Length: 361
Image (tube, rainbow, N blue to C red):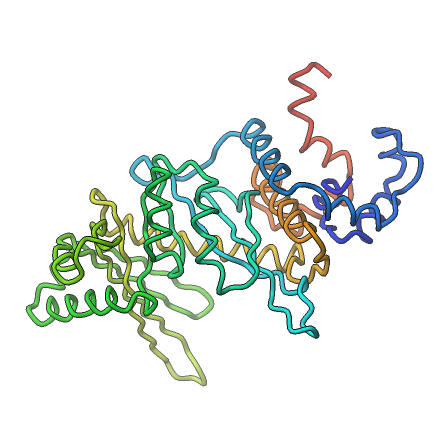
C-alpha cells in the first residue's frame, strides 16, 4: 500500500492512509483488507522496515523486470553520485542540520534506489567510500562533485574496479595550484590552443552558454610536482573547462567567465568524452529538482528511525518506474503521478503486468 501511494505521489503516513481509504475497494479485493490501517501503522512500517533489504530487493526487482537503458562511453557505463538534503526531516528549532542522502544515477537511467543517509553535508565525504562499495564498478566511470576528489574515495572506486572523472577545487590546494601553474605555462608558451578540445553550445531563454574543454594528455607535471604516493599517481588526463555565459540584464549584454579543472584516470579518452561526462553529471541535480518539486521530498517531515531513508528509497523507486513507463517515460513527472492517481489499475500494471503475463495469469 505504501508503494502504491508513493507511485501516486503520496509518501507521508497521513496521506498514505487517506489514499488507501479512497481506494478501499481495490485493496479489499487484492489484499483482503478489512479496514484502513491508521497513519500510525503506516508510520511504523516506514520506521521499522530494514532499508538495506528494501533497497536491495527493489533494485533486484527493477533489474529483473526492465532492460538496462544505460548510455555508454567507450563501452563503459557512467555512474553519477551526489548528495541531497531532506530539509523538512530536521528540527530546525532544536538546531538540527538537514539530513542528507547519497544518491547514485547511471547515465541514461533515473536515480537508483540504493541510497545512504548522511547526518550532515560535512559528513558526505566520509560516507562516500562505504556507499561506493555497494556498487559493482567494473567497466564503470564514476563522477562525483569536488568532495570525491580525495584518496579514500578514489581507492574505493579502484577497489571496485571503476574509473573516475572528478573536479578539482580548493579542497585539494596542491593539485589545484599545480594544474593552474601548468595551464599558465602552456598559455604563455602558446601551446594551450593546440590541446585536444571539445565544445558544447546551448541557447535557451535568451541565455547563451558555451562550455569548452581542453585536455592535457601529458600529466607528468603532476607526478614531478606532487609525487606518486597519493591518488595523484593515478591521474592520466587533466581537463580545463572554460564556461562562458552571455545573458541580457537591463537591456545590456552581460558576459560571465568561469574556469574549472577536472582529473581522470582514463587514458583512452577524448576531450569530447570528458566534456560530455562532466555535463551529464548535472543530470543527477535535475533529478534532485524533480524529487523536491514533484515528489515534495524536501518537505517530508518524518524523521524517526528508518523513515527518512525508506521514504527516499520509495520515491526513487517511483522515479525509476516512470523512466520505464512505455506510455509516459518522456512526459513530466506530474503527468505520471496524475495518471496513477486517476487509475489504480495502472499502478498494478506497472508493478505486476509483466509478472502476471509471464505466469499466464
